Image 1 (cartoon, rainbow, N blue to C red):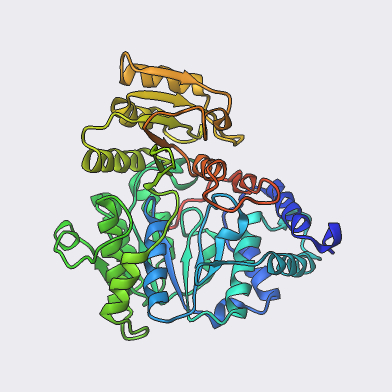
Image 2 (tube, rainbow, N blue to C red):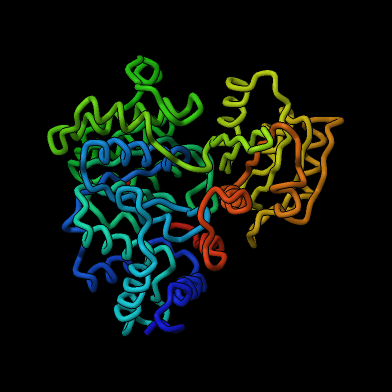
Length: 437
């Protein structure tokens, strides 16, 4: 039973304990736990979303559209910014602390009898808790984001109404492979027999893999080309950035594909896209002092390029102060080379993660990319926010972990009783190459 009087803090402590098992890519444990839970996934309808970037925004758009249509919509995403509860939402209401406690207690009972070398990981447990909660809440549809890759991701035990691959770019190569084709092979693992697949992937080598697997599995394929993305018809968006138009086009294509199963009016689509909320992604806030702070979880080179494009489009004459913190296992050199030339000043901080890149090393790259720029190194983000950096325009970027910490310091999200951001930490094991059929 859960310690600490069945408290939420005790449940979080248990979730922390699962991090010892790292991340084991594969479906066996998740299937076992789901079976002991009574196979809740069999009672639900899913839209399964994979991709390198844009997964969260696309999921948020789909959720907002279907909620505007009057449905009960589950949303499962990762990582969380401040609280574990953000990962599991129904109609954008975070799972209650009492429900987390109750589900953790059930999971602990289901884990009894499992071999010591087959203990479930944090993400596997979170996935099954989400399934149970959404089934209990009788969700009409669940927007279901992959954690890592797709083929061997714990979320892949479901058979969705539609599969979505936002794009295929370089990230997590140590687990998904070193080429775009190998990364696409992993992400295309969510494609199911006869289930429609919608994608905005552009890279020819990635698209070829998606097309092959869709053909083999007789899955109807909808490809968003550059012309279809820019063809108009995108309602006004509440999210900043031209890249969000691509995500919106992807969401619209998915909604259109599923109209026979889940009818949605044009009014609901308009309302959903104009009111979608997705914190920490090109989120602009203005403090009482008039200072503007742009928060963006750009966490790889592709994300950094999107941020750079948004700055040039929306703030063409600005030379903002960048507050950067990046993870060591990302291409931090490439990210600094993209962002540093845009900065008037650069403040480097460590991400609160055991995988944090060393600010001193980032500083060398930033100075080379923008000679003469002032670069300052701090021991923590707390030294910078909210009061140390009073520059009129700040851009905080480099990692969603950093964004979560910033949002806590700026009091933009409710604080957790204890630091729950550490639950985002995980270690992985490389995936076995997907077998070509």
